[in-house]
Length: 80
Image (cartoon, rainbow, N blue to C red):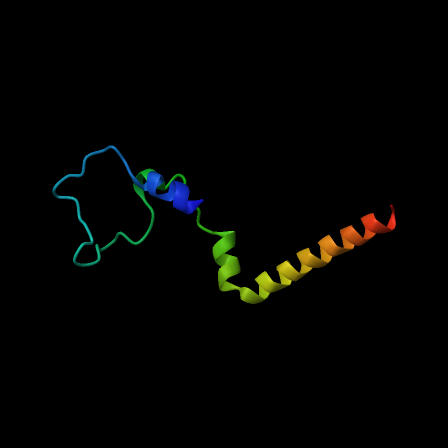
């Protein structure tokens, strides 16, 4: 989804001023978070990032989901 919409959300029709800072040769100070036009749609947390940084929790949730699906499938087959 990010590949499809991410680039479009970061582009604007507003022309860039020559005095605008850029990070072509060095990092821009004080530009380390989402601000401006994108602040209203930015989220402080991400379930995907949290699961990526907590592999134990991700594995436990995946296992629980598999057990749940198998349990539902077994019940459905038993009641046929």
